[in-house]
Image (cartoon, rainbow, N blue to C red; front, side, top):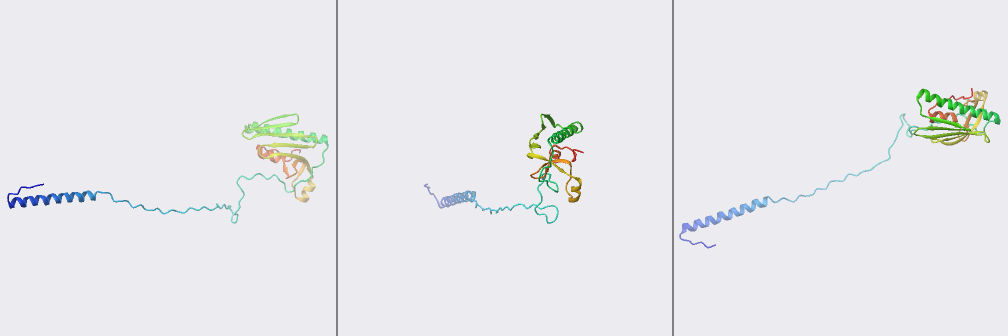
Length: 211
C-alpha cells in the first residue's frame, strides 16, 4: 500500500493507524488460538482381577460340611434285608398276588373319591395299568412261573418283587422289620412294593396288607 504524505502530522496519523491495525490482528489471532480444543489425555482404567472359588455348602448343624441333597429319594430298605424269597405254593401265590392287586385298586379308588385324585387304573388278565397325569404309566403284572409281581415305574424303574414271609418271633429277637403275613420285596436292595407305591402314587396302603 502506498501513502502520499503531505505533512508530519499526517505521517504520525498513518503510523498510529498502522500500529492499531497490527494490534487488532494480533489480538484476534490470540483469541482464535485460545479457542482451539486442547488434546484430551486418555486415562487408563485399572482392570480388576476376577477369580472364582467353588461354593461351599454347609449344613445347618455344626460340623456338617457335606449335607444331604434336597429332596432325597425315600429309603425303602428295612433294618434287615431279605436275601431269599419265602416258599409259597402256586395256589397261594395266585391268591396273595390277586389280593394285593385288589387292595391297591381299592386304595386308588379311595383317593379318587376322597381327594379328587386324577389317577386312573385298569386291570385285566393279570396286568394293572395305573396312569398318573404328568408322570406316566405304572404297570404291575403277575408272573406265576416266577411267583413274582413285576413293576414298571416311570420314576424308580423296573423291579421284580418276591414273596417274603417273616414271623413275629424272629422280628422280636432280631429287632428287624416285620414281614408279618408276607410282603413283596425286591431282593436286590430290600425295596418294599407297598412303600414304593405309597410314595410315588401318594397312597396310604397299609404296611400289613394281608391282615
